[in-house]
Length: 36
Length: 201
Image (cartoon, rainbow over the protein chains, first blue to last red):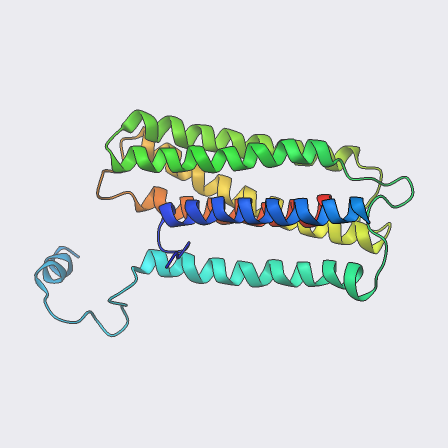
C-alpha cells in the first residue's frame, strides 16, 4: 500500500496521484457549474 | 561515544526499549510532524468550509476584490515542477550522480524561492487586506500558512544543497535529502488542495 511518509519515491507518487485526482474533480465541478 | 557506536554495531536482538525496530527516528519525527501539519491545515480548511458551506457566504470575486487565478496557476506549475527536480535530485543521490543531486537540489530551491517571491508580489498587489472581510482573513490565513511551510522547506533545502555541494550524501546514506524531499512533496500536495479550493472552486 502506498505510504507517502515512508520514502520520497512514495511521497512523489502520492503527489502525482493527488494532482490528477484533484485536477479531475475540479474540472468536473467547474463543468457542472458552467452547465447549470 | 565510539564505544557506544561499536556496541550498537555488534548488538544483536531487539532494539532498546525507546527505539522503534520498524521506523527510523528521523522518519518517525517527520511522520509525526507531517501528521500534525495535516491537522493544522485541517483547522484552516474548517474555517474555509464553514464560510462557504455552512454559512453559504459568497466567495471571490467580492465586489472589486478578485483572486489572480492565472498568476496563481503559473505559480502552481512552478511548485509542481520543483517536486520533479526534487525527485530527480534524490534519484541522483541513489545512482551516485552527484551533478544531478546538486543541480536538482539547487533548482528545487530556486523554484521554491520563485514561488514565494511571486506569492509575496501577489499579496502586495491584491486590493484587499485580511481585516476587510472574513473571506480575506481565510484567504491570507490559508495561503500564508502554506507560504510559511514553503519557507521552512526552503530552509531545509538550503541545508541539503550546501551539504550536497560539500560532497555529503552517498548512494546508501542520503537521509538528509530524503526527509526534506518528503516534506517538500507534502508542501506541494497541500498547495494543490489550497489552489483548487481557494482559487478555482
